[in-house]
Length: 503
Image: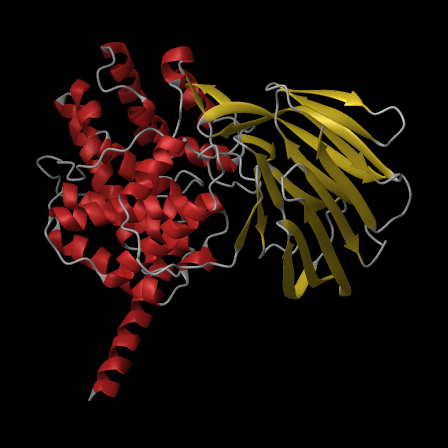
């Protein structure tokens, strides 16, 4: 009997997934989102009684009336957002962030009426311009989910300047976007996309007192987490934090309605929180591994405070944390190039390292094999990472050796590629407020930090290096200009050596 029941459940779920895929295809057609008639709710009540600090450490709005995009570090005047949405110069990722309306959460609820009218104008513009279009990224699942969430979360602010006509238009759009997401809830999406979609449905259903949609979303989340390895599904450390934050919001709604917390949700939250705790630098921020944005330490603390620590110590092998007396290093073990971050005390010295193939017409196919060894002697650390993969059907072996002394004042690195066939550049992301002085008799430079510390970089003789001092980003919630160190080769070579030493 159980076998028949399980088979029937699988068939029903299969049909739901097929229906969701059908709607996903239809949603790309113009006028898919158009509605002839849809009953409007009488009101919206934000049930998520949860307040966390801003992801930004500084009030960018009050200082310059701008929003700094997390995905690129680009500054945009809030009054110009409708204009920017129509520009071809903005990337789809940047437009998606603007379509998400996350910038509204940065604004003060007690701001003057002029700002509240501006918010209403931007929402009115978006509804009129994008209501019945299939334009991407305006109606991508991520952007729609974030927009629906942010509009409901900031409803108290938005409603302060609402008249009857705007309220009706706004509520109609809320219902329309919720219907759009509900039809695609069974899609087999990537973890962050799926959790963001479900959070939006949960928050919106609670706001509209739609208990049926709420229960459906929580059930689907439980089933999805049973079938997914959440940790391995996150592409970046920032994704881990985002997924954890979304689950905390869902948890708050479950608690509000006094429902039982599904074990799959609580277990996933504990695992994600443990990883976040393990990848934090001594400055309180998280390892970003090439991300453009990492939120403020106070925000990270607040997120972690909502997750209970497990008594049993959990380990996760994707991010390796190496600690010496005065420094901390992080290595991404599941990346075939083993990117590195390094901080000394509370100062980040290397914010990321990565390898880049200058030829864009390469094909990376086949399985990737990754392995590493770690040796510790008298608190000195030796790391050796190896990976094997294919480029244009050619087998490639990559090896990275790293030495860190027991004080964290001396790092030596060697990277080896089994072929000289490809043109490769190595990138190291350094702090912004530094002074560079070339070495006189060696291939390298002194790096003087604002704190007064001096570090000396040395490179192998065939290496050439250059600097880009104007890379935008947000580190620990504050806007920064990073320094990008590019290392190339003057001669064909498949090996790079560099060392970093505190003077």
